[in-house]
Image (cartoon, rainbow, N blue to C red; front, side, top):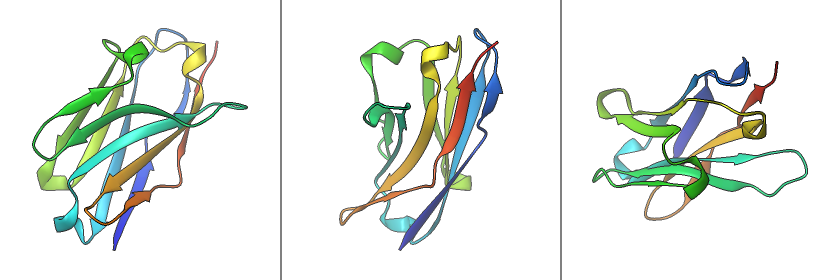
Length: 115
């Protein structure tokens, strides 16, 4: 079984940056991809970014150029670097890990972009 724990959320001013971390533990040898979704109040959860263990990355079209996903294999951790943040980026950000069998979600971390 895989567990994932997010960290790094918080309050940031518009135009600022944050880096979220997602650490995986447990049966990590079965993981083939990890990623991030987000859910704003009153909205559906949406894809932010995904990275496969072969190095392929995928982003929501609206976030390309501002968000970057990366992976540190030695630490079993995936990062989401978020730049030029906007108030509309305010949401709970959820990390997940995929195996061949299922997807495991974290508890989420709040990101608030406000002056």
